[in-house]
Image (tube, rainbow, N blue to C red; front, top):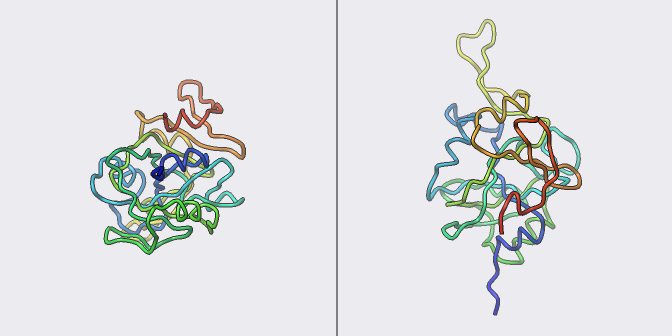
Length: 201
């Protein structure tokens, strides 16, 4: 009997896992880019991920949706990775758990096929592979307002350069309606790439 592999399932569905910086965060220590920088080094702490395929869009981009945010951490599933649960919608996950189901073949398929605005995989001990962006890029940051003593937390649009300059060592990926893309920092150009460039065999 063949053992179900969520990693192979994602490859066959041309989908990758991305933990997005979310504008919903109210924790001042979990604003962009600190939230993603912190996520890169976490161990044994589950985070929320969206499955992303070409054609998916973020909440500000119109289209079919799929992404919880606009810039995030692309990860692979490694030998030590634990997929705590999967869901076709927001499963209300936290470090205490989630309302999703186990990562069976049926549940993983349903998490994509029955996806609502975005789905959620609750994963720990993932393997960071790069930065993933879906324009337009909105993040949550501190903003000083004239007349207020304290800065407020609010979402704002940032440029691609602002998004990726915080992570100079990471390769940068995206997707259009047809294919995945990789950004060439020296030339400032995007090029179409296959799945293996994001997640090697």
